[in-house]
Length: 126
Image 1: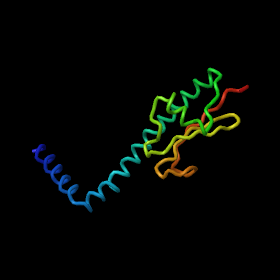
Image 2: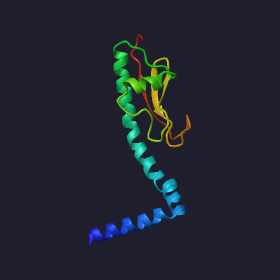
Image 3: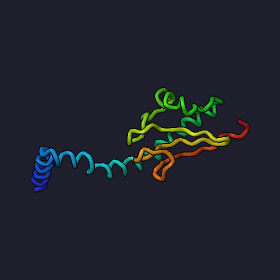
């Protein structure tokens, strides 16, 4: 019984994908809320890992990458993906006593309420 239900659902999905207007609607809209939620769950952990790797760099008395060289550091040294789940580049912002790594979130715009960030304090005397 369960196999028949699954096969029926697959058949309905296949027919829906064969109709161009339905296919476009499914591709454009149906998965966005799901992918946004998955991204919101993945990004905070990725930012913690990124900040941990930068903290190791700071503990070895190395400089943090500058915003314009951050993409190169991501390609060379970061163990995760070079972009966030929405295809946007990660970013870094330096402060006097801290730094922040972040994602612009689903809207891809900086400094909006859907941005996800991780801020770390720099060691004193630096």
